[in-house]
Image 1: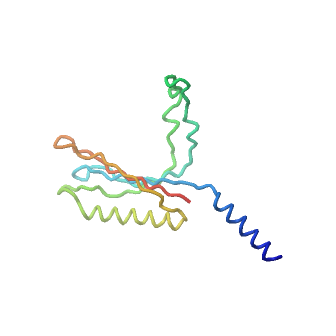
Image 2: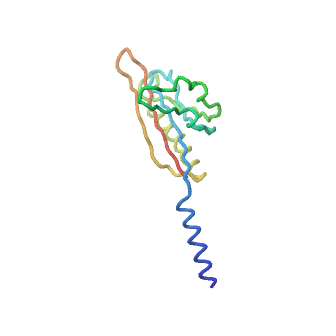
Image 3: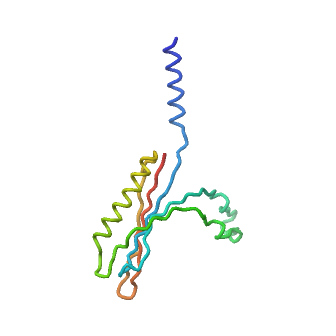
Length: 148
């Protein structure tokens, strides 16, 4: 009888854990591609939850949108963590020491997230790079999506 009761409890626990709702969290790195170290590079983590439904409207006929009623300023959060990291370039050009330093800082953040029970789910990156002699601007952005 005890074995049946224990087996039933284990089955219920497994069922609840399989159907448990997952939570997601995103950490973003922005690494500047501006010569001379003039850019700003950061690791950004939001620490405030937001309900996207408050900023979502529906279109009935594909043309009429109520997005004009949604204020961009209301969508901004005030609570975030901002960690300074280094720019890809120094005055002499690409700086490999800065890249290694950023890797160490990002590794620290990833390890902290793992210690807090977050699983790295996916990584997405993109770049807006220097378009030539007259541009001199660019960023390399990476989003780390975690879940638990």
